[in-house]
Image 1 (cartoon, rainbow, N blue to C red):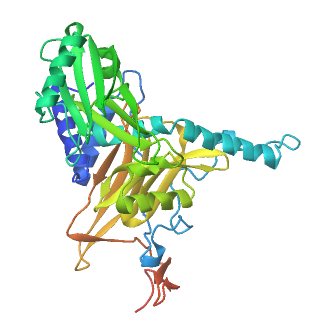
Image 2 (cartoon, rainbow, N blue to C red):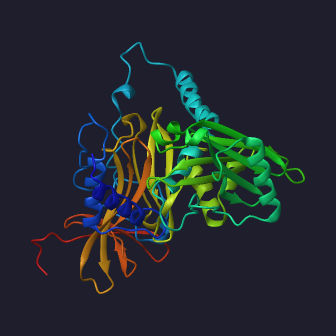
Length: 407
């Protein structure tokens, strides 16, 4: 268990680590991992260090952008099949049709539960409470209310029987407004979602919100689309971030096929479509943060009928995966790591992008060792082969001399 001073240090490191503008030094990242392991539940084994990091040989040629990983960029986690995926004994093999049906069933599960997946992914952006993300839930209203919204608050207070002074707006996206309040002297928490003249609400015991720091209190409404567009689903939730603040999350999507892609805009929309083409499952992925101003994605894909959890770092065109069946605990990490070389080719240091989990199994992103004044370089050891892009982006293999080679 953490002492009060350690808890304060943990919260400070988490605030610094998460979010688009966050970042830690190696020493700070090591301290964060130490504090997280101390915070584990009673009876849980101590956190196991993930061990030495594999270097990512990031492709240099522009033509290699977003290519699937090759043998020169091996997966550290997730390539070896798990025990359940081992081939059946002779005579027990399912035919191709059965295998296709099983895989199709997995993908159908993605579609059936994609809203839950999206909700869990949204928490990635909230649980660390990093700078750069919409942060609500501070004392008083987090949203500047219009006169009409103030009237709505008075109406909700009169009808809902909330604790005096507890009703406040914790998030807004266009016409969608999320209210949070307590009842029964704080024993019950309630969320109300107003959007397009529609409203939905939900209440639950306050302890349920606190137990897992996760999404549980939520509401959704369906509003008509414009023109020929289908219904728009608007979903909202209240979640408690790791520093104790209650924050609001709002997501919206069209109800027609593939409309979930509408949550991504501009270059991220194009990249999301590309991820689908590369074999990542629809409905399974989302942006969980940024590294060097490029998206970091959490996604899933099916390999040999097994679901894999993947971390995709666009800035270095790297993908790291592991079997989803391995579970999610505070000892589990998916990591992409490499080196930083300054512009003069001098000082070298390490960087890493890590998808880690709290003791409750909730994921969060940690970026450490990054520097805006340095450029990323692939790590190539003596005797290995590096592929460069030629004049017409044709690959050129370059053999790196061994340490004992002469000039």
